Amino acid sequence: MQSAAWAKIREAQGWRPEFHQLGSPALPVALVLWRPLPGGRSIAYVPRGPILGSPEQLEPALAKLAGIARDRRAIFLKVDPEIDPKLAAEPLRAAGFRRGPDIQPVVATLELDLGPDEDALFAALEKDTRWSVRQAEKRGVSIREAIGEDDLRALYDLYAETGQRAGFITRTWDYYRRMWGTLVTAGHAKVRLAEKEGKPVAGVLTWRCGERDVYQSAATNDAGRTTYAAYALLWRCIIEARKGGARRFDFGGIPVDLSRKDDPMHGPYRFKKGFGGVSKRFAGAHDAVPNELAYRAYAVAEPAYTAALRLVGRIRR
Image (tube, rainbow, N blue to C red; front, side, top):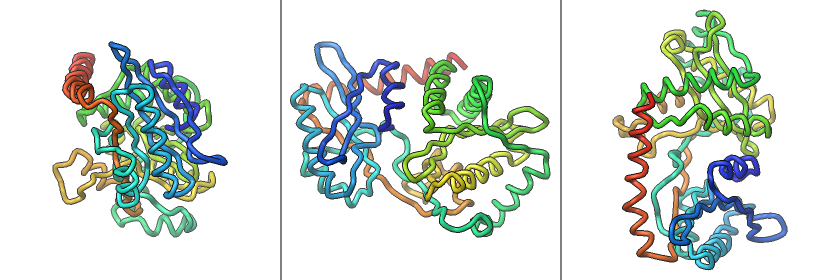
């Protein structure tokens, strides 16, 4: 989300991207997305950034970003660096950032070390997970990489069905066609489909982020669930990530509190944890706030906008 490809995607959606070098010689850097608002105001967002060379660079990088927010008279500038909360807490406080509403739903994840060989990784799976991976093949599930827009559409149809079943917001086909297509074309993402008798029953998009692959936009229909297609598909993503040079596999999000079974992410977590990995926390979103009054007004208006999006999604379905 700090890439030029992501900047292109967001620019097409009305954001104005800027890349800022916040230190030298190369890092830290940040893609800052600006959204204009009425009255000459704006908000800014640094998605999954800034990008650092070392934790010591965080505080001066944040200070520069806070200065940009003040100079531009932004209502706020939001960051959500992928850094452990214990390392990020003091630099965020010192630079004047406060905990704000999250934009990215993932603030905790599982990461799997891809150093062991394939046999060792498979042996480390939980017993039920190994059984499920094997069952998919026995039940006639095949997996292939997606090619072309028709395959992207197949993933979208699966994703929309999953969203309706699970109750999360899905946007229009054109939105995902542009986003997924841009990331795949830029070489940042791959789409894979699991098929049963030639029909897609599960799909997933994975992102390459530096030395790790990230499991994203996974979806399955009822036929995929009864054939355990998602298990075989995730296993294929893991071994292909290893073959492609990734050192870690990021499972793309788990609950922050693993003891809460009422968390909407608890079910996906039970599925993911069968493949191994260790839990990892991120600091979450934090805001630099040059204008307190405008910030409070925005905090009131934004939930109404999100509620309207959910209503539109339900009407469309």
